[in-house]
Length: 374
Image: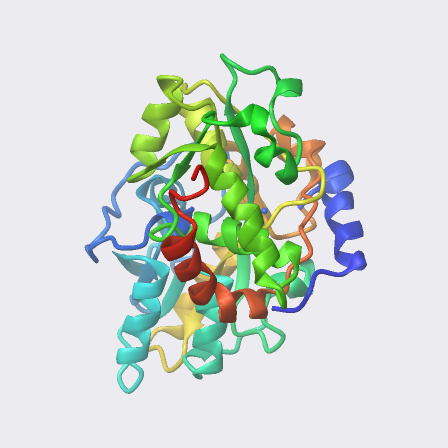
């Protein structure tokens, strides 16, 4: 991915201050066993009614996805309403698993559509000639940073990484306002972190902390992470344990993706709030693509257009806190918290991040984790 430009910054500000147009899924679903999804879940209201398209012979659509069931239950029934002649089958797995499976099936593709993948996984698939080029009708509504220049994949939503805190303990002004405040000694033993290596979200945040200190001199980033480790009370096994520690106030600050913070606070009633770092945040892209050589490309194209329509993007923003990548979603169709939130991206070179992540995270695990207090 190319480096964030000032033009993009201007776009992002305009999107969320005036006419907004944002991805845990792929990060949080890795390692799931592939299994058929329940495609008969009831839909929810919120998307404008669309006439059914019953023309043509029966079609099949096979989707490999890293998205959660709570997304399926909104999208799939409505797609079925519009295209009753298309029978949809979904297989759930992590983004890396999807990549490996599509790669293994290259000679005889079994999937038609890839729904929910990181920019790294999708870019790798594109470079290996696993994705079918397709320029959708909304192509010019997605910024260059969030799509493939050859139209082989498009970002569906954006996933900013933010500072999360227990709002029953800290007032907004008492929480860290930017990344460097996290290493202030006053926050010693107040931070709990989801175990880094198994988590795409945490690997991204930690790699970004190294990159911002200078990718050519990772020692500076290692020093910063050592100070963060000194303030970290515990690394939890998984997100469930992270939430438990925060609820019990065994720690009051963490780092996490914004969509999940909103889901946990607004849907699941956890006492969480967030600070969007003043200097900017790493923003992951959760994207979609057509599998090259797919047997049902017409159905796959229809699903891409439907999934990323303004109506569906607005409904997923309201009901599942997804920040759409499209820039043309009316602010009147978005939840209040999105209307005035500026998603300022941290300046990162995603290609360098992808190339260095394994090395950087191995160094952190072997030389920094649990050693900052010594």
